[in-house]
Length: 172
Ligand SMILES: Cc1cc2nc3c(=O)[nH]c(=O)nc-3n(C[C@H](O)[C@H](O)[C@H](O)COP(=O)(O)O)c2cc1C
Image 1 (tube, rainbow, N blue to C red):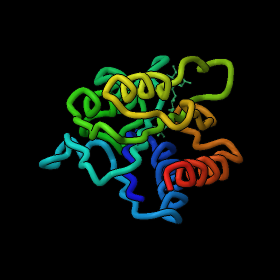
Image 2: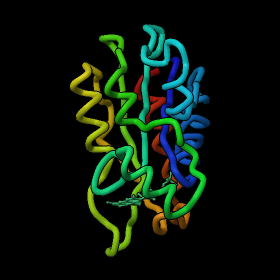
Image 3: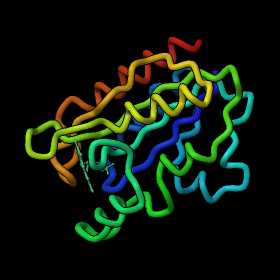
């Protein structure tokens, strides 16, 4: 089994989840975990090759959905340096080509408290991957953070490990 995990992250929480999912998937085959800006800048980064069995895509929820250049700029304005400064999942999905037989799954991070709660980027990523022809092997899945920059809530890394294992088992 060969898997590709693509993530976007401003403050590091989504990166932690992506790396945890990648480590769980590595029990089932070979895995590349890659930050989306790296892929956007890479020659051939807009094509997922036919040998990839599973594509997992995740990003932070911004203004009820996937980030946009304006929400990423707001994150930089409010908090300084960010992980994904070279584009987001939305831009990558807009240009990517997938093999017809690929399995996929979408995840996001979002705030679990009332004040900022709302929306889930994973739903948009899931729809987009389906439109591109991927077979979705899991419902879109959210991992909760403590606030914009507060880090992951307790239990979310364990949840990511379990989710990654489930995905790995589903494609092997
Ligand atoms: C501009 C902006 C808008 C946000 N809007 C939402 C939102 O609508 N709903 C939500 O649950 N969280 C929202 N958040 C919180 C992010 O989901 C949170 O910062 C993210 O999950 C942290 O992941 P990261 O460390 O990988 O960036 C927003 C954050 C930013 C910076």
